Image 1 (cartoon, rainbow, N blue to C red):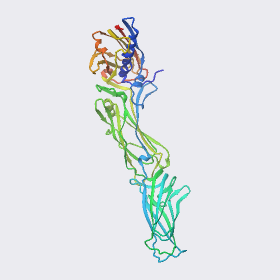
Image 2: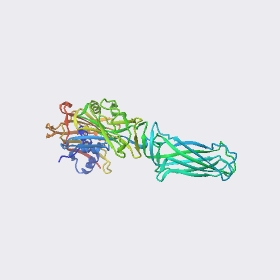
Image 3: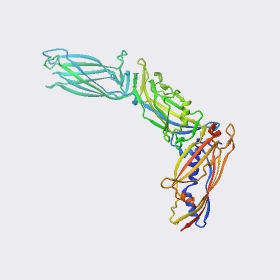
Image 4: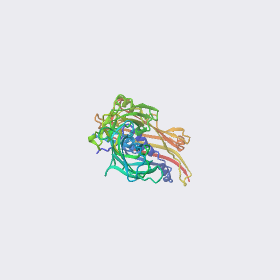
Length: 543
């Protein structure tokens, strides 16, 4: 059975990151030196095995959201995923505190209100509910909230105050309270009451005739104490409806504008790309997936959408692509779908995406804008659990071309001995032997540069034109014969001075597909490298 692997045109990186690091593994060389106390010449096999693109991804991937898809024919597509935006209900819609005051005047002048007599003052009014933006609300179910009433009476009589709020309906019925404000010789007589609004329904329709209206019915009963009643006597009420958290809101909702913070999807295939030559993928695409449980039409557009190559500083702007609609086709939930999640998607492909890939971006950078798209005659809703998610999937089918596509990386490495038993090692000669069988339809060039402690290049290990030839494959991708590199390089004592002092190795690799990088090739999951690497050395030691 074919092995599921990952990525095509970075296979050159596979050789360097998987093989070269082992080939010049200082621990292996040191261990070998410790074992040859009795012989001045030795040979060690360093690497023998097969390496696939899976091995590359396990070491080189920077993005936990990158995945590899393999179809029934074992053709590979590399997918990078990310969440472009996630908007919660509380991000979009907030219920502001409501604060207002009302005076209930006596409305009469009486020189005397005898004990035992009373007057009744009815008072009803409506108050506008202050909503965000231009929202016209029908109803709200509260998870929590608080109604605070500060009462003040200037009557020189005992007062019984009854407050009924038809617009606020708790699980036990309309919210109403009766409060006694007893006169004891001084005014004003004051009282504060608080009412828990948890699980309260707020009806703002004024019995179906309007929106954003709170209704209040108040009755003031003034009980005679023998004092006069003045037209200026009153009950002053300060209303505060605070700490409102909704379970659901219905009506015309206007949430205004919202902008997400800029974020990034790393594209690890290009993380070490040198930015030389050309690189193309047949049919690359970005798929945007919309998942919405908000009953509100939203216009979503990209404030930023671009591929960035931080190695070269070149950026490709996707947000202005003619293939990208603005606003994006974001679905929304209708009133008969309350609690459901609807989804849709849009795929960006075409010439802009071809330019995007040829730029070899190692980042996809994005930020979105969102705003209400409904009109005033539409009824919408939002739940406390409502969310709008925008996800992105960058898909790169491993079919395309490369012409001197470059990989460039630096690896810390040292051949210095740390053994206390060996004071000095003189390497008289060193022979590097490599046999690499390449089953990919790609020519790979490779060079290793030696750096000293000052990060200055002091030597190179391979000839300038060292090439791992491509495999021969059929038109349907079947392997006919692998390309083979059989190479033996000997370094003399004089040449090894620089190698013995090395602190780092620079790996420079390139990939070119058939026809000098002009013909498309495909990568399948059974392609791999078979690698044999070894070293033979003649040394002198002192103990």
